[in-house]
Amino acid sequence: MIPFFQPSPSDPFSPGKVFTFLLVTIGPLKVIGPFAKMTAGWDRGLKRRLAFQAITIAAIGAFAAATVGSQLLKNWGISLGALGSVMGRLGLLDEARRAFASGAELLQESSDPLELAKLLCAHARLELDGGDRTRALALAGEAERLAGEVGPSESSALSGEIAALRERI
Image (cartoon, rainbow, N blue to C red):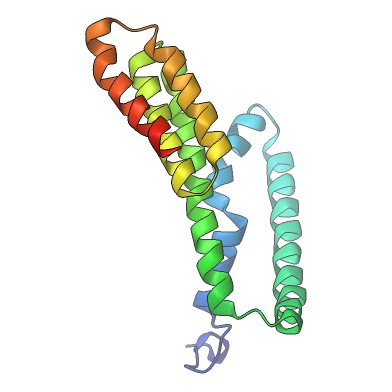
């Protein structure tokens, strides 16, 4: 095995950790679809050059963030554990918001107001749990508007859910 790739237990920058850090921060799995759609019909060489430039810029940015960021954290007295905890929660909330937005977009296309209203209620509960009352109120209002578009038998359970949500807000 190559000595460079043999991780040491005391080494905070083992190749596996660096790879995981780059995978999480750069998020290549999130951009493959949009990149393919955006560059459809382009010359293969141009696609590769663009992808390589993007990877290079992202790696430079990640390196700068790691070196400058660690010094800033040290100067400000912020522990990596505290930062990781906060970033994990914010990251999960952000991912959930993206998932709800994607689901809402699909349900709007399928013209299913009942399911869209249910999704908006779930999203509003998430926003309340995340501390964003204004956003939760807007989502509950939109769900209530949609509840008016569905039949009375379907909207009764939904109306109860919206009422419970408004009570929490």
